[in-house]
Amino acid sequence: MSLNYVMIGSNNVAQARAFYDAVMPAIGGACIAEYLPHAVCYELRGGGRMWLAVPYNEESAAPGNGNMVGLKCDSAHEVELAYETSLAHGGTDAGAPGPRPQYGPKFFGAYVRDIDGNKLSFVHF
Image 1 (cartoon, helix red, strand yellow):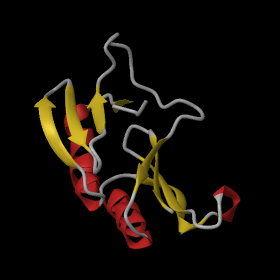
Image 2 (cartoon, rainbow, N blue to C red; image 1 turned 45 degrees about the vertical axis):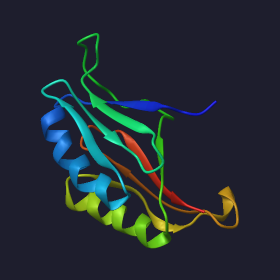
Image 3 (cartoon, helix red, strand yellow; image 1 turned 90 degrees about the vertical axis):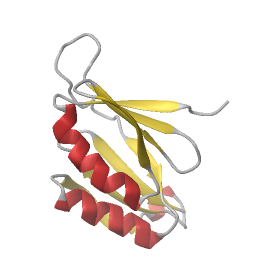
């Protein structure tokens, strides 16, 4: 079994899209579908997909405590680029790039929150 897609909630997909349109190319992703104002879809390197959408139940989107999307990068430099690009486009710091030996000897990661407060991890092993 493999993961096919992940959904990330947003209260303003058009505004959040500006953030993701900047960040996703830095890690090999691209927007492949647009259904504004409701959703956009990004294809990730390797074929997985990430949807950015307003909640189907029409309630406000809210980040979950303990929820995070981990996005694999090809290098430590790519982790740093994704982190810096995120901050330059409205994201907030949740952990600067660097080694995380508590997750393994080769783990290098950075953490941000998007404009809706969703937590993202950029990782390289």
